[in-house]
Length: 212
Image (tube, rainbow, N blue to C red):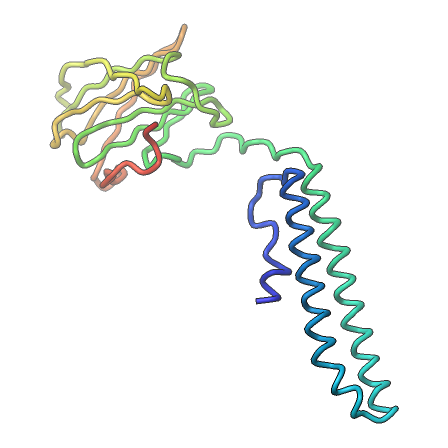
């Protein structure tokens, strides 16, 4: 437990705020004080019953333990202060991993993510080259289903979500092959997506953390 308290630090990649910095240092210092207090209560009776030679050995081990604790205190303080004043890391460039459980395609400086649920609902997110989200008021999407023979159905507009982060359309549950036309000012692209096939991504059983 004590080792976890001392070393459980830095799991969050985001830089620390000043209140988090203070809380982290207080937690560490309180832990050190508790360790020293309990250790002194345990070691005091032992020291009283030792001869001079044994006391010297115990003092040597105690000095080594104190050195390790001070070294760890210095390391943690330096690491924490460095994280507190460090600038946030830049977003990863051209990351093609879906963040909403869908398939990702790139055209120009844009990333498109299309996800499908088993209910037949499709959702489209648009982001820039650094995967920073683009509000749905800045792009339009039309969607149409096609069959395995390539016969394309009629395109219809995808609606804007109330949260402003994606566009969506509720289609038939059997529609798993779709073509979307994504338009931004001065540019348009048409892309095909397959779901629940060998080359396609699985449909989602439910939307998790995407609707706002």
